[in-house]
Length: 392
Length: 223
Image (cartoon, rainbow over the protein chains, first blue to last red):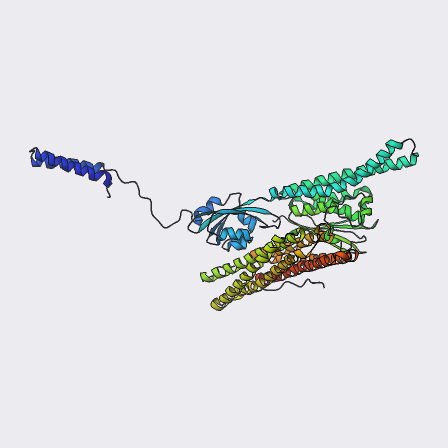
């Protein structure tokens, strides 16, 4: 037994000193020995047991095994690195970067030069990078060294914050021009009617009023389209999670879009039981916009085919095909731009706002899908939307 | 990939993949910044891009050396060999992508009167598409995802269509504004470079597909 030297040795010295003093006083040797025995024996028995020693082992308290359980269910993507290798990635990180990153070099998971510079240095710190998984996303990387070549990396999504500023300027730049045109003509006509209302022949006045009404209606649909566009943009970073029976939804919103008088031009070919994670209202809007476009730009009385199927990659594929004039291939890349029109006059005449496909594109992006437009002049246009289907 | 009994081999492959990813990250940033520099006339950013290219070149030769060493020392077989060969080829292609970005950056100072130069507004959307392809193909490489690689290949025709559209646009702009011909000609080269970047992303995608499956993707080129 290891005694605690701090209290034992002074005690022993005191006992010996006492014994010498007693001896000097002429006490019998036997008595002195007895006193010493009791004294030292007591010291020995009551001596405090030492506190249990900290085990000095080689194992690091921050070993991967200990930590991985700790962070597994955190909502924040967390990665642990041993040297430059990723040894642990919690559930959120695996979902974000893919299962394959475990055991890989960290550069495979985060290849942005700024991230690499941070992770290669042996210092704690943070960096903000663009394009971690999707090209436009912005993430903040916080890294802490916890010892023994092991570091913990935390990933925080900053996309929404960075985006807000950008989308505001876009909105103002685009919208002001489009809003100004109808407003200018409304104001012009109203002014004319006010100043010379009595002098105007009734037909002219009626024509003016009709124009005002038409422009007002256009403004209204423009504003409502802009509203839905900005709403979709605002939400674009949270992946929709509602389970949607796509087949039923497409059937309903296609006939909605067609209305009573165009309904017989629709040819639906929908595979049953296709489910996606989505936002019901937005998917309805997507279908409506596509079907409405096809009906509008297809030849009058020609058929518009709407088909829905499941691809081999587990994607729901929605195709809307019209047999109209088709679109010049040069125009196709620009179609999803806001307020882009292949033929401004015709689009305005039919009440288009120039936002329909932009809205479609944003909805598709929010659903992590893909949008393709194929067209042949004189043959017609096919718009294809692919959205990841619900697995299982 | 299966674990290897020789741990050193595992480490080599991991490092090789890390180097490729690092090159890719640099190239990706260069594309983005070179276009940004071109559109805003930012000479400093352009210089950054040119500087970065040296780093990419250095990494390429590092990949070369490591790949040769792996082949010489470890004699890899089957999917391991494919992985190394693909890495070797991908490094070369990514280096080319870096060169094209540098070339775009080099032309920044040659374009004048940006404010009133209409064709310039066509470039961002095209650059966006090509950058997206490069981004996707690097994700596909990291995940060994053959399906995503095929999607990248399928996207190339969009960039080509954009190139044709911009080409015609710029040419007609030149005819209407002969004073801007020298600037506009530069833009044609820039568009060409972006188009080549798209092609190279396709090449990488083919390599990724090859490394993952052992076969090249079916040819979807329609001329």
